[in-house]
Image (cartoon, rainbow, N blue to C red; front, side, top):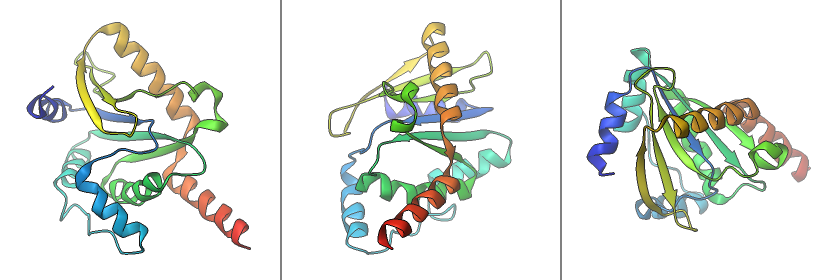
Length: 185
């Protein structure tokens, strides 16, 4: 898929947009310096609906009635990348995205989930998905538009299982902070 094809999927969705993330690291060259700076204790760049076109899109479309949601299936201990990403999730949640986290080892039904995807307008006749493929270090390889009813049904089932196993972002963050305090006591 071209970037324009992907953009058409986001622009065309009117009811819902869901993202499943299964990797513990996504390697995007432009992010590497920001992540390294954050790991050194430097603040993240300001990211809000004012500064981020992506967050502005989420906020505007959420206000218009579209539901944005995401589940990230994580492994413990959390990778540096996931810890960095969790901070970004707080910003995305502030824009209106409903984010949940599932710990893979707590849910045997999630053990074999390793395919990322976007699912658009899942409860409509216009449902579609984008299958996302990555190399072993999390670099994007390709994207595939999915409209096949069988694959869509499988994505819906995966979405439901992941959603049911996951907990809300704030609850996950509170649990992590509590565990860190216990370990540091």
